[in-house]
Length: 161
Image 1 (tube, helix red, strand yellow):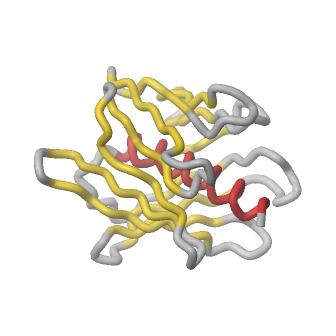
Image 2 (cartoon, rainbow, N blue to C red; image 1 turned 180 degrees about the horizontal axis):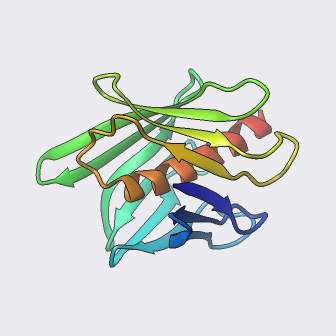
């Protein structure tokens, strides 16, 4: 699976086996609000505050979770996927010269790795997504969209610092 940048404003396509699964599109250059359609569901991700340190995840108009930037330098993704059930994930940048994001669930079990295909000096990023022992109950494609958005948000926040 891959995340391929489709514009300089942050849009990206999720690709599996050379087939486009969906495209996450930001509403404009200055907004962190983005949307996509995945498996018949409308997914919208939009800032909760002016600093964009927390964003809400909406699925078919209902808030199902959020993405929060931690002061320790990682992203926390919280998603409700069944009545009274939610999952929490931590997305950490483990790369030095090249971006490499790793996703862990609340039990600290590694779920996936996003390896950057680009040089850090470029404005857009493409990633390969590797999964070895994916155990999450959330569909991989949906979680990959949230991770792609979180990686973009991480880079935006870190470049502003």
